[in-house]
Image (cartoon, rainbow, N blue to C red; front, side, top):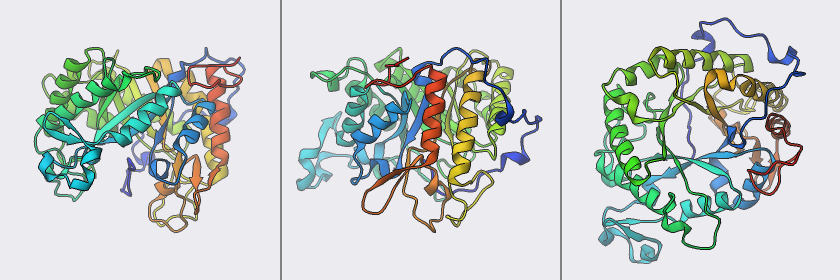
Length: 397
């Protein structure tokens, strides 16, 4: 499922208070920084990429060849545990479920993703989101329902780690052992699309239960804050005000879309300053969604970050070396482009229907946009690779 649907997002040009940095298009890159870690470069996996018409293995191999070291993907709780008890499972579906603490659970979709990623040594950042109907609370906005209770969500996290963590049952075969060690707790809880507002108290309550469950199952796992969107430097304060909240996550995550690459840097600087001011200077930052959708003349909904295919390629070529250059000053551990593949249907409502580096066309044909070639060139350059080998951790120099 898509991480994002059509929403009204603040135009960062109205809220960025710091002066814009010099345009990266005019900068010289003669003095390159040291190569970045392989898992600095990421993409979101969503939309048609996870549909029935796409060869997921082929696409993930192409990600690796393009310099991707980490993939952010939804682990959909409502799909994995749609029924509260075995008696509710239709007889025709019972073979698809296993019992996990009394809750019938279907791991098939997640198994496929984790298994393919392991073969490619591709790290996964799961976004654990979407409450099943049997534990869904109320969101007055009509957006995603929060969990009605914290216990079932925490139990689902435990089940995921018991299966895919370092001692997980999933690895009791001859497949490569690449445990999942990062877990992101929901997405954009400061937006009513994903959480009832005001969000901080109720979200931190879920975060506390999730942190406890994750650290009990895998003490060395990384708990990633649900990505805070838009003017994140302001919203983070609401979380940090809650007693003990700062100890409930290991990484801050943010999502934002800007009109130019230079504004990406300004956004991240504002977030970093806020984190430092709040006393968490050493805490890493993940930039989990950035994009320039190729939606100009294509979608009903438009924003100032929408562009053409040529514009997407130009902006990606500019932003990737910029992120690499400033990653240490920003405490930036990874960035994730949104998204790998779109449906690209002309006339679609949301501009994010055109956000992909590739497009699935009618009939299942996948076409690469110029932005993918720009992404690959830039990613390989900052990784110091002439090309990538068959797995994400290999680098041919």
